[in-house]
Amino acid sequence: MTNRLGSSEWSVPEARSVVAQLRHVATDGTEYDGVELFLALCDYLDQLHGSPGFDQVLPDDERAALARVVQRVRGKSAVPEEDEERLVQPVNAAVTLTEGRVLAAHLESTDGWQRDLGLALQGLFTYLDQLYGGPGAFTELLTSEERERVARR
Image 1 (cartoon, helix red, strand yellow):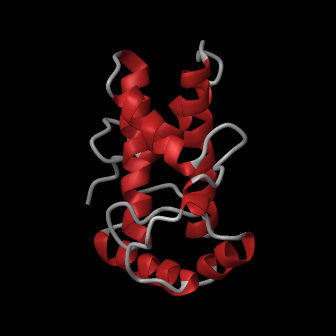
Image 2 (image 1 turned 180 degrees about the vertical axis):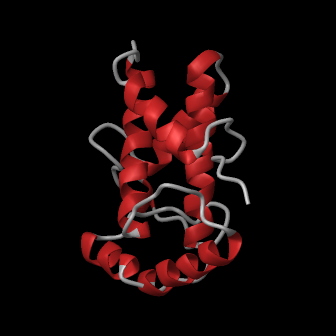
Image 3 (image 1 turned 45 degrees about the horizontal axis):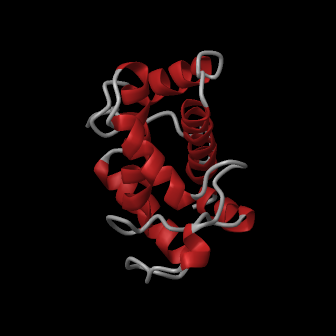
């Protein structure tokens, strides 16, 4: 098992710590939006994971069990048809799910810490896709009630 976020060099705890500190370093809107998106997705995963929260990439068997619960709560087991309304659902005040994927790819194509942030964001999207049923499946946020049901699994 690896505790890395996708192809990022950062483990989950490292990424969360570094990105929280980057709030003070981000100089433009894209960088800041990337930082905020990362933190919002981690908060979302905290809610899905339940106690103690999202502090590691779950091993395959635990991830599969969590994915089954997420998919059961969503009432879907396959990649949903593209729905414009879901894809423009905001993750936070500045970024929608669709914009978040584009932003992650943009940051990944840059240099320095911005690239590392992009890789970590891509890792989060991949992880969420796995929980939702496969590549591209993370197209909507669960409601707070649904997140509670998943966390109680």
